[in-house]
Length: 437
Ligand code: SAH
Ligand code: SF4
Ligand code: F3S
View 1 (cartoon, rainbow, N blue to C red):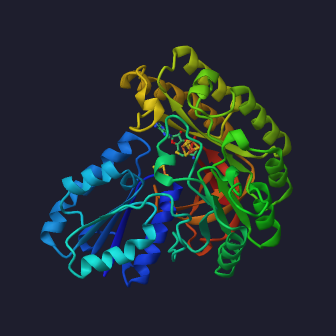
View 2 (view 1 turned 90 degrees about the horizontal axis):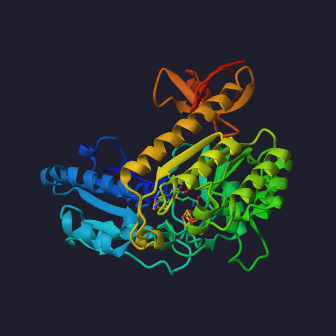
């Protein structure tokens, strides 16, 4: 029996898909690339922007003939998009070849839902509300055996005015520090060398726990009480990135010098309308503090253009912030109205063409900055964790620096999962190219 999982969205969803894979493996399924050969296909969906939703509908629709050919095939759809009950019901009604619809909060129930279908139940739609506490631990089948994602906090309660995530991922729920440390130690025993601590805002970690612990303290514990070689974390909300965190990152060698710090806009008016809780000045001051203490740190960000009411002057402020901030990389998005969020209700929405024109302009500015920053690394030696074949060019392999930059190296199947010294020979906006020394 074979499974195929199709994942959309952020690292949270990627990690949830590893949990789905773990549960399916426990049921005796094995992974397969070709959908035609699968006995079960699971979609793990995202609805953060409209195009994510459209892609899901298109792809699910395209699998209808597979189900007609093979009525035994089970098609299950879960993830954030299904956590919005109206959307889930509509999808269930529209795509009659879908057997199971489940939400993010009842992910752990998937095996029992599959069993019910196998026992002859016709179709199931079951989506839990978010108030049942932490999603229980389930077996995890990870993307490889040296890098692991580890959720430290589920949910988000920041309610940025454009964002649907708090509605589908629920309130913030932190995992117990002892459970996290146990998991890290287990991973080390299994040979893992790098962990990425995940949360929509890792800086909120611990606020809901009885223990008096915050994110910097958790990070310090992991860095000093375990033997893990590389620790990453994401995402940090700028409004509560503390000096304590910067100091701990600076002091501990195994914490990677990389901050993903979404700024979203460079205009104070827009930041306020977005409910982000910081100003452009405060944001730039945080970058100064980080670079002061950790000069080699890479800083990446997310930016939205075309938020309702964004004037050309607001947009110029974003461009000017991007130039000042000198980000290593930015994920840039055109604002997409999401039903149920305050920003979507505003009547000063910008036309699509204007949002796209601003996006193109912003990307051009940032690509140049990324290129210039990467060019400066030519001639330097970096420690690279080799992750496998390069996606674009299987004749080469790729890996990541501590600053999370992608490095293309000569083919080296025997070095996968190892740290190697690489001299950087060339650099583009997104990629470094190097040779072993
Ligand atoms: N928790 C993270 C990010 C979650 S979503 C954080 O707070 O930064 C990832 C990114 O998608 C966001 O940072 C934002 O830039 C973008 N995004 C979220 N909602 C969006 C929307 N409605 N339109 C366009 N981009 C959006
Ligand atoms: Fe969305 Fe804001 Fe929460 Fe990030 S912090 S997930 S952008 S509401
Ligand atoms: Fe992530 Fe998309 Fe959900 S960005 S949290 S998978 S809505």
